[in-house]
Image (cartoon, rainbow, N blue to C red; front, top):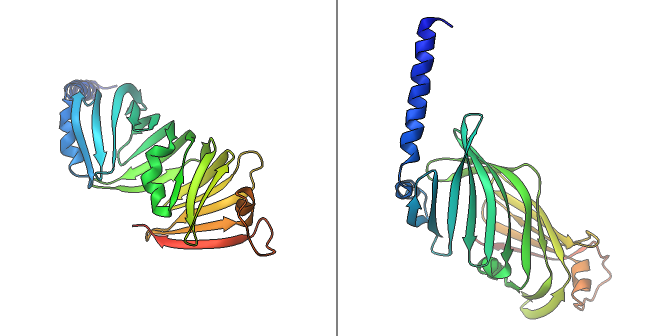
Length: 250
């Protein structure tokens, strides 16, 4: 390496580590200025630094919780953080590698039904039990004010412990006890699709989908009516769709 190249490399390394040292002591409260650029997202009571700290958050005045993060070093020159996110009835754990215009997110965790009841109530569904998210990796592309796209490395996999579920169907109220269920699905380009089946035999009970325009679709299979002991007049097979509902949720 020539002398000028040695000098340039030393200047680059010195500048890089100086920047890392300065940023390492930035107070975590400085993140609040970035959060203001994200609609419906607020940080409250931040502590520590941007490298090691914790904060509480509020999403659209509906979802609240706290998150704690720690700098785990560099992965191919990109910063890696481990984190834990806690809220009422849920705990998620994972890590992020922050790249130039996207982040690689690894996540797993558990949640009680209380933590998602507000979302389920939009579908007139009320349930008990515990959900467990299998380890998952996602590539999240973002702009200054929003998430642009989310791509999963494989379908997400969520197990539900089973329990009591109440729902309104055809303007009638039902309440049943269900066995443990599994949900597998995809999320890409603003669209989501989920298949719900029994854990013991993987036979489809329900399909849920969400399109980019905010229209949700629910397809109920004859097998679900059998599992819930719901009377049905018809000769459809267990794999046939017997009820289909569309609703705009946002």
